[in-house]
Structure formats: structure tokens, C-alpha cells
Image (cartoon, rainbow, N blue to C red):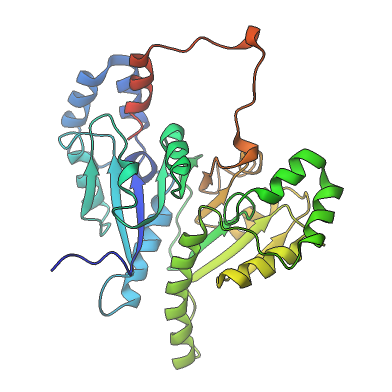
Length: 332
């Protein structure tokens, strides 16, 4: 009987997001693919250390104990490694006792195009180019940033999202960028009853909500049950544009536990207290302040991430195709 993915929350994670591959990446960039392969084989018994997405993935997988039947969550490794060099990745998975048994290894190429076939709601990678292409194809993807955060004991999972360009599309953000804050607020008031179109990560939130539904049933059965999954929105919106966020989420049939409408207050101030296991934002400037403490994911989607046109005199020449291939290969 085929393994059923349709009712699961499926996440794809590149080995570069799950583990710290900085040493191996340096070998690849300085000495090439042959030495990289030798390095991985030589150190095959040395487990890779946790990467930026490790705490999030570990705690997400732990939610499978809420089901007595089929797993609620499936995580699949998607890697640019070939199967041989990928052995160290999977041995590291076993070393850290992560219940991950499925992987796709494609030498020098990213497997993001298989996201649809594998029913994935999210793809995490350190490779910006792979993430951008996946987003352009209509998938949900993000580039992990910063250093792995400490993962103290506990079973809860805290997820934080920006709103525009992440959960919703960037149609309102386009107004903000083109016309400024007063025009943005006026636009949101005018369209208050009109739900925003869904963004790339709305389906991922829907999958998280399905797990939260199971927890809510447990609370009904046992008032002493402590909810493990907590979802927050941390957005630069404030009143009066905040109301459209709430009404939009209601129209989609999704929900969050907390919302921070900060209106220009630095998000890092809140994130350091909230301590999410992962935070998604479409603007790098909102991630830079806390990326070394908070596992952060840049979703390079929408108007704020479109390349700025440079004058002809300042444009750098395009490197040869071989250089582009080398630059992308090690970010597995």
C-alpha cells in the first residue's frame, strides 16, 4: 500500500538548513568537488552539528506522538549531494535520532521541483537561488539565516510569521512601497472587508492548524493538557491596517494564537522575548537584528525582493556558467 502523504504536513529540508555544513562547504569552494567528496567520506563517521532549522525540525517531528495512527508530520531531506556524499547526512540524521527516513539526493541539482509530487507545504534551504526558483514556481520556500539557536529542554513549538509577502501576497505591500504609509493605511481601510489573496506559506499554516485542532480536542478532554504548538504573527502593521489581517485570516479559515502589530518598532525586541523556533519574514532588514539568536527564514517573495535595476556602468559581467554551477553545488 502506498505511503499516504495527502493528509500529512510535509516539509522538505536541505541538508544545509538541517546541519552545519560550513566546513564541508569551505572545502568545496577552495578545492573543488573531488576534495569535497574525499572530505565527506573521510568524516562519514563524524556527525554533522545542528544547523539553523534543526530545532524547528526536531520539535515539528516530535508532534507525531499526538497521533495513534498515521504520522501527522513527514520531513524529507532534499539535497544537492549525490547519494554517496549524502551518506554522511543520513548518518547524522540517525546520530541525532531524528525520525527522518526519506531523502532525495541529486548531484549538483536542487530537487525543489519535486515539492508538488511529494505534497510539500514548505522547503527550507541555505541556497538563495534554489529558494527563489521554488517561489517562482509557486511553492513555499525560505532561506535559513544566522546561527543555530540554543534548544533548551521542552516540548513546545513556537512559530512566528510576518504577514504581507509571507502568509498573504504582497498586493498591499506594493501600495506601501509605491505610495507610502498614509496611502497604505487608507487603502487597507477602503478594502477592509476584502480578504487579501493567500501567500506562499498559507498552506503551511493550515497544516499547523490541523495539528492544533488535535491539541484543542485534547484540551476539551483534559483541561490540564498544555498546548505545545503556538503560532504568532509579528508584523510592522499597526492600527488601523491591523484589522484587515484578522479578517483575512478568518476568511481563509486559519488562525494564530498571538499577534504583534508593531508599527515600526524593531521586531527583534519582541522576537528575543517570544523566542520562536523559527521566524519567517520577507524583508531582510527585519531579520538582521535577531538572526544570530532566533532561527530566521527569509522568504524572498514580492515587490520588496525584486532586483533593483542598476545603471549600465555599474553592472557586473555575468560569470561563466561553470562558475555559477560551482557556487551553487555545495549548498546542499
